[in-house]
Image (cartoon, rainbow over all chains, first blue to last red):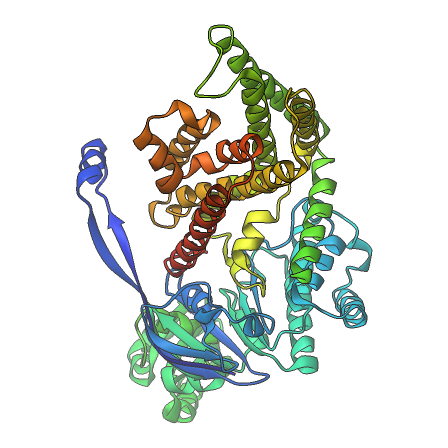
Length: 331
Length: 262
């Protein structure tokens, strides 16, 4: 449903040193620098797939989403969304896509949601019975039936985001771009938004691209992630594969009995793996996957252990490493 | 076309609901615009105390012309002005994004979505003033002259919007166009005066390069002198050409829209 090939976007940015003299000088002569926002992205998204796009602030996620929505024109490259070039602004395409931005409201501040939705019905030419059934279904799922006649500006942030979701999905889009949809929401509302999105995907199977800084969003909603760093796609694959590919170690947590001191035998631990945390009788180590069993056995043999656990590292930890450019970390 | 009319009906309904929320602003705007009308009329009354003719127009003709201008201004203030005011803000804050993903013309949406319902009464007042000016005009006015006049005034309002857009669209590159907006409002003053007061070359510039005289002065000439193919053809032809150029300029600007960081 979404095909992207070598998509690039370069912005020209005016660089101005601080101070009045530099401001005066910039009236006559300006220095521009090129900022590569997206550096040759290639990927595709299929029907019913939710792809999580992860990256630090300014990595190029939102620019990429806006290019695919047809808002920003690329510097070079190609993209097809439902068979259309998004920048040709075909109404047939725009009727089938939707964009939700957690940091920007699309609804009219002074009007109640019901009025805004009525305008959207007209814009998207949704037949009246379909519109009413869709509105009823969405409001019930998000539990905002009683808020439909309240002005948007009088709603809480969570209720507003739910209204934004309804506005974006009323026309049953086949492609949905979600740019930080849970930003600023409390934990309960975040959860209800995630549950809603999963349920929506089950019913309508749209292609979705989700950007978020909350790992909970990514872990709950996406089986596949794209990691973007300084405009470049550094990873595109399953959430699980990222662990095996970029973190070839396991996290070994050892709780020692009170009488034991690991400091005395530190050279043993250093030989088995990398000690990443050590405090009050608890040691956390990164141990190569293929040596984890023998390392655990040796620790159990040589120390007075109260408890020992082996786990995969946190996904957020690996992604943080990837975003920071320290991939393929080994112990 | 019917779809866009239905959409516009929704815009009207929204705008009235919203304007009536702010009662004080509603009444204040009416008072301010009435003061503006009074000043415009008084300005020409003072001039005619010292002269019989301005260009080749008598006071009665100029009075019709001024009231015609007030009607064009009221249409602009009611239909377009709020939208024009918001446009640079939308471009700079990246709020244009949502308008660009809708399956309707972004230009239509952004130009017409906010109907200044609190100026609507002024539109009625300006229409009343023009009706009064036409009724007190001493010569008989043929119906065809009147119909063409009203049609060309409506065209004048659209031309006013078109011209203003030429001054607004550069915001896509400049990001601050206060200077251009002020320049537009200063320059449009030239269209608020009878055409014959200008020299030949100034007139030509104001007809073909920056066609402000086509907004009100030429329609008034059609009213007084009768509809001529050359005047009507020139007015509609140039207005149409400028409108098409503006649409092209808009589409070109959208290609350079950089939105804003989230």
